[in-house]
Length: 191
Image 1 (cartoon, helix red, strand yellow):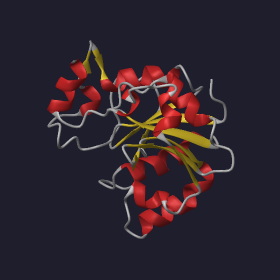
Image 2 (cartoon, rainbow, N blue to C red):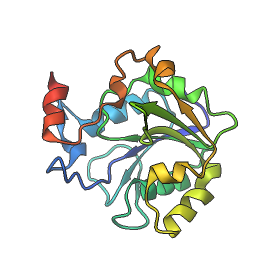
Image 3 (tube, rainbow, N blue to C red):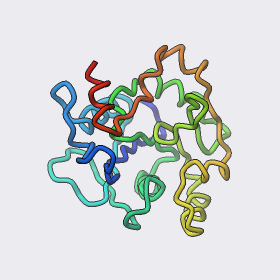
Image 4 (spheres, helix red, strand yellow):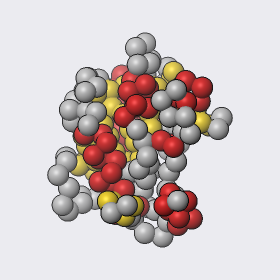
């Protein structure tokens, strides 16, 4: 188990490009939310799901966004506030292939930083990343200034970016960072 940390699964998005709630999409007989939750429960003593409104039938605690339609930054703030641990690992519910090995590798880099964020294809992956509770002030300030962008907020934190080379040792094809945003992504995932 990764100590001092809570897993925060973000499942409060609009799913506009998918056309239906991504959390409830079924892949190999299990919903995306179930798959990610099971992986997180194998790694963390506590798992929370960030939602826009409470979901029926979940066996894990839920936290609602404080501001409606404010994106994942609002979910991250709500989750960090409720977690009661120094860190959260934030992961999107549409990332069904995230592996324990990748999460454990990222956890190694937390000391001395406020966030640990993978870089894949030259882009930060803020929804498969560790965030420290010490960064809550910066996150709230970003939101108060009307900036809802996670990537923009990262510019204000002390971030340890983790390169593809560092990640490939535990996930050679970087499948952990494949997210399902569109029906085409689902077809690709089934292959």
